[in-house]
Structure formats: C-alpha cells, structure tokens
Image 1 (cartoon, rainbow, N blue to C red):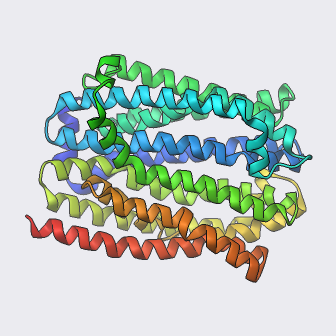
Image 2: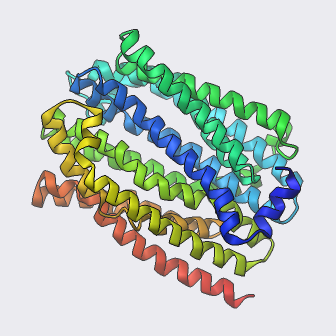
Image 3: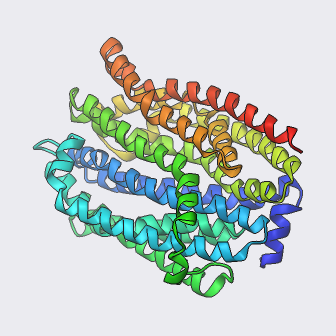
Length: 448
C-alpha cells in the first residue's frame, strides 16, 4: 500500500473498512504480544518447577516498566505523527520518528545499566526470597541486555502503524514472537537454562524485531528518519511526544507498581499464589490486549480525522470501535470462563497453583466485556490533545485507586478480596472515562 492509499484509508474510506484495515493487524500484533508474554511462562512451566514460574512472575514488573517507556514514545509519537499526516506536515514526521528511535535506545541503555548495577536490591523489592532469588536474578540479567531492543522495537511498531502500515507493524511483532517461541524450548529445556533461558530468547527475539524495523525505516518508508540531526529537534517535539504518550506510559508504569504490591501481598500466602497470579496475569492479557489492539489500531484514524477537522468521521469511528470492543470482549470472556481450568493447567502441572489460578482468573475476567471502552476513550482524549484526563484515569486505574484497594480488600477479605481489586477498579475507571470523554466530545462538536 503506497502513501496515497494510506491517506485515503485514514481519511476517506468507509468506517468499517478503515477500522478493519487498521485494527485487524493491530489486534494480531497485540495477540502476538500476548503469545510472546505467555511463551516464557509456558516453557518455564514445562520444567515442572513452580519456583521458577514464581521467579518469572516476580520479574514481570521489569518487562512492564520497559513497555511503559516504549508506550510513551510509541503511543505519543503515533498520536502526533497521525495528526501531522492529517495536516500534511512531513517535516515534523521526520523529526518525531528520529526522536522516538534515539530516545528509545538511550533510555533502554540507561535502564539496562540500572538493572545490572542494582539487581539484588531490585529483586528483594519485588518480593524474591531465598528460594526464588537465583532464578529471578538469571532472568533479570539477560533481560537487561535486551532493554534497548525491547523499548525500540515496541515503540517502532506504533510509529509504523501511524503511517498506515498496519501490516508491516504486525510483521515486526510476529518476527520477535516467533523467534521467542522457537528459542524458548531451546534455551529453557534444551540447554537447561530455565528462567534465564527464557530471558535470552526474549532478548534475541526483540533484537530481530528491531532489525526489521530498522530496515523499514531505512528502505521502506519515505517519511521516517533515523538521522541524529532530526532527533536533536529541541524540546518542543520531545515534550509533545512524551506528554501525548504519558497516559499510556503511566498506565504501564503503575501496572508495574501494582504488580509488585500484589506480589508482596500474595507472597505472604506462599509461592503458589505468586506463581498462579503470574499465570493469570499473562492469560488475562488475551482479553485485555484484544480490545487494546482494537483501540490502538484505530488511533491513527482518530488523529488523522482530528488533524483534518473531520469530527463526524472521528465520532463514527469511535462508536463503531466501541461496538467491536464489546462484542469481542464478551466472546473472549465467555470462552475463558468455560475453559478456565484447562487454560491454567496449560502453563503448569501443580494442583495447588492450578486451584489458586482458576479462582484468580475468574476474578480478573469480570471486567472483560467492557474494558475496551476505557482504552477507546483514552485514545480519543490523546488524539485531540487532552492528555491530562487520560493520564488521571491511568493513575487511578493502576495506582491511586487500585493500590489502596488491594490493601483494603486483603485486610477485610483476605486473598479472595485482593484478587478482586483489579476488576472493581476497572469498572470505576470505565465509568469515569465515559463521563469525562462525553464532556470533551461535546466541546469539540460545539466548535464545528
């Protein structure tokens, strides 16, 4: 698809066709990410060692935090690039794409240095004990070396999608995932590396994905740039990118914090609940990322329509996307409910972990049919330059509301209460997002 076709798709194609063309590859990319995240837990689980599964669960916050930076640069850059394309401002596109690339690599290198220098205190903070520490340490050291590639490959996928090249963004994600799935059994079991082997496979997969996006930037796209001179664009673009992506970044960063808090709460009940919540977290990503993929996929249409002043197309896209989110969310939640025990059993053969996991998965699924509304509303806010309310919603969902609620529910209802915290928080933030976005949208309609 050439650039003219991309412009036509974003600005003129019928809504169902445009949403399908942009969202389907994005959904596939999101599900590929889910498989990618599940792979490590699955293959480590095949070792039959619940302690190694618990160790991978304890190190989840590291990967989440890497994705927080990736989402800040990727989602923020995607939102601004799509608006710039709607305004036909190609010089800004070059500067934004170069800034995102170099910023991702620099932040990734700094993140790797911190992980390698402070491995022990970080893992103790995450809740690692004498039985899980060495397994968690092996995973952390190797994932640190891949940090720059993890951040840039994830951010680049958003940027490529912003140009309308959703298929190419999907291919990059699939390259990394397929490599990870192929290499996981080689390193985890074949070479006997266990949890550390899963991190090695993850790092190699992200390096291959990064190489693909490097090729796309240099050879395929006529709009993007990797020139350092374009990255040194002053603070204006850096502030715009980071502020637009901050809601998504703070969402991921606070998810890291809340995951640590939940692990610290659960470790008091033993390592089995910690292993179980790690599996549930990965498994439930299917429901969440399915709808997040839909919302992220249509974001370029939102940005392009807003940049072009076509508020009607913006609103029509929003309504259609929310309907799609509800339908797929309801179907996925129903599927998970009926297959909850086989799903948990797929990851580990430990009756205690499976028992905990089944109960936890039901609790996490409760918001499944409606969580997509939150993602669509937040993307709409970011696309029209209203990053602050989207940021507040992110802070509430993964921080200010969730973390106190986890402690409160655990104190009052014990383990069963703690695992309900996420779904309760989801419904509160979904309702708030609908109210806030309705007011913003009304203001936009009044100005047209």
